[in-house]
Length: 269
Image 1 (cartoon, rainbow, N blue to C red):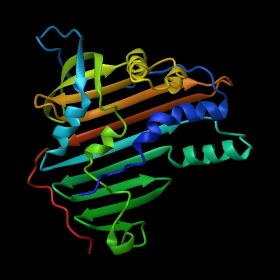
Image 2: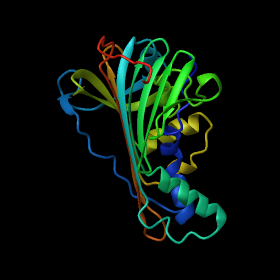
Image 3: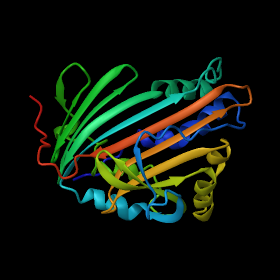
């Protein structure tokens, strides 16, 4: 099966920096976002967070080995008045792009080895995709049509695990704070990373930390089962540009119904 090259998640990694650049690149004040999962206390029963390392590459490799699962993704970007009044061509294009993807809802299902269904809502439109083997179909609201030459759909390539791996670094992340929680009915370990720990990772990998530096705080949380399967991850950041415009990004993905026999993906009628 071809890999799934998602265009959504990379937006969350760059949107804050792009918005700040459009509206004036300066500081941000951030919030980690609200954690809606039910906490069960840290491992060992103490409830205190501890520092551990997380191998995301191994975690999402395990996800790719599942027979089936359902997933949903919500991303909301609020730029306030930061994009208003941008007149030059480059800033105007960036503003239009960010406004288009400011509120996205995605849900779907995957059945190994090569079946995928995705429903997406953004810019006030509903889009649907189905891929089964080498065949793919798309529905933009006007009915189902075969996608591309011979029905292939280039934006669908691989498993939905790539939805996470394209956004999260595959290297081992250290200095994570952990706690034990139940998410989507599954016992998990929650790994939490703040701005400083994410910056350390970027510096260690020799990557530019400019996008991280432009916010005061940001929070990344990843939830893994006892079998090292990721069932949820969330990113949140909130800032203020030098003109005083509020900017925020929130993104959450849930992966559930692991290896469920009830998940069926059929060719569109």
